[in-house]
Amino acid sequence: MISLSDLRKFKAQGRKFSCLTCYDASMAKAMEVAEIDTILVGDSLGMTIQGCDSTLPVTVQDMAYHTAAVRRGNQHAFILTDLPFMSYATLNDALISAKQVMQAGAHMVKIEGGAWLAETVQVLTRNGIPVCVHLGLTPQSVHVFGGYKVQARTREAADQLIADCKAVVDAGAAVLLLECVPAQVGKEISELFPHTPVIGIGAGADTDGQVLVVQDMLGLTGGHVAKFVRNFMKEQAGETAILDAFKAYHAAVQDQSFPAKEQTFQVEL
Ligand code: KIV
Image (cartoon, rainbow, N blue to C red; front, top):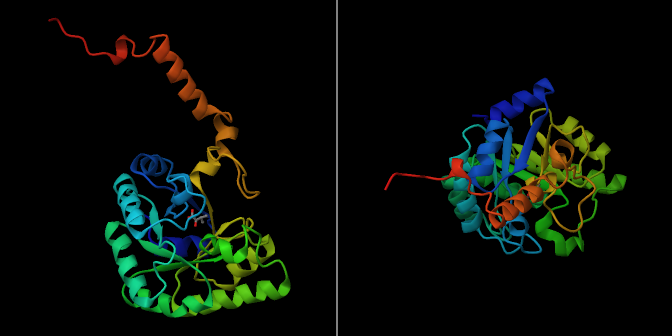
């Protein structure tokens, strides 16, 4: 099983690591077979699993439930779990929430924010809970940002982001995750912290790891698709491979070619 020290070793070696979001055991098993290095049980499950229009309605109980399922399905990847909206607003809340997801099987918690999280990071780390801090575009603050926009687009804003990264790394953050920042900023931050693996999503090719929402890279996300997404399903199996399987199943049930003899139990009665 991949550990935090493996991620640090990968960074030192310049070996980039993969991360995908995952919310259930069967997908987690497929990711084990594919040797995906790290899994994020993301609060994006609010959209991908629950059909909400943001991550805000997701609860700690939801995160613990999906973390347990993922952990049962995968014995290979390092598992990060999001603490959802308002579940770490106070130090006490952070401890109680982190306890739940760690006991469900997470190896690390992820929280969204900046320098103001330093004390939270310190307290969680002191209690044996490794922390990833998510910076740049932080979806739990979508209403503060006024939409999903690229962050750190000026030198001043990039320097502010770097100062936030420094504050949380000094407080003990073991991993950083950067979302929607210019590639130069992703590179600069990854180089600035030699012992802290940096995961990117829409942060360019120079971060130490990359993460994608699994539904996005399988082409299962309807509506607007972000610029940083690549549809690997389209490249490997054809854009509509999963939909084609559903359609073929529906047709086979209707024309009674499914179930065939091979899928049927028969006995002499
Ligand atoms: O919840 C999530 O899936 C995330 C990714 C977008 C990084 O935080």
